[in-house]
Image 1: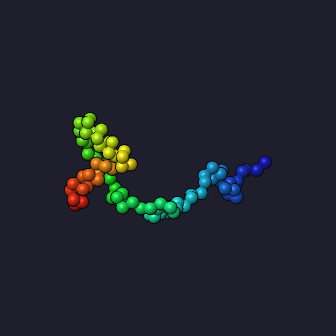
Image 2 (image 1 turned 135 degrees about the vertical axis):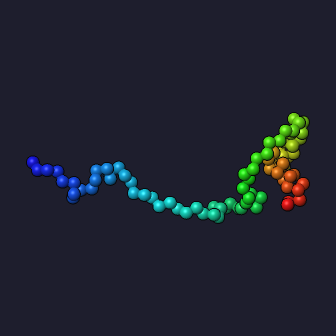
Image 3 (image 1 turned 180 degrees about the vertical axis):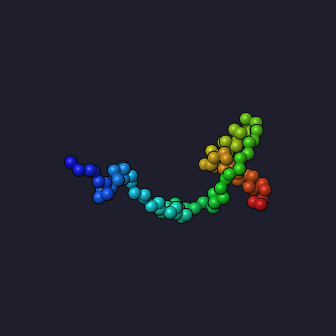
Length: 86
């Protein structure tokens, strides 16, 4: 029996290594059927911790529920209107 030669064959480890898959570039446009909401173009990255009375929070929460928005969205719009959209 002669010596083994690996020159003609692929490296055995190559059986376990897959070829790289080319990633698709990110699409900046929303999928079909979705609309871009201009309120959310700017990222919300700043946080504000706010202490309020429980009764005031209940009023804000009730108003947000009536308007179909979150408490955060309601407070954001109130602050936006209060600053004149500066």
